[in-house]
Amino acid sequence: MQNMEEMMKAAQEAAGKIQQQMQDAQVKLDTIEVEGTAGGGLVKVRASARGRMIGVEIDESLIKTEEKQILEDLVTAAFNDARDKADRKAGEHMAEMQQGLGLPPGFNLPGMG
Picture (cartoon, helix red, strand yellow):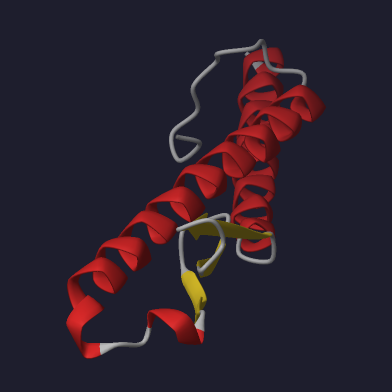
């Protein structure tokens, strides 16, 4: 019976270690920055790899009342571009972390998707 208890304790310790590494990975994703662009670079959106918008930069040539709808569309497109890049960076980071844990590719742990 003691062998089973030791195995359970080792499994719990491993689970705790994985959970801590997951939390650390989520914190790191907030420090990775990506930039999305639209309109040939006239609109830029910076975001974290977790998808949190950090800032927006709009070229002065777009700031005209009659072009308000175009500007709004470009900001939306730039944000979506940044979000796509953030998702890719997050996926790359999480895949690296999984490899570091010795998990097989595609193995899905709760909180890693």
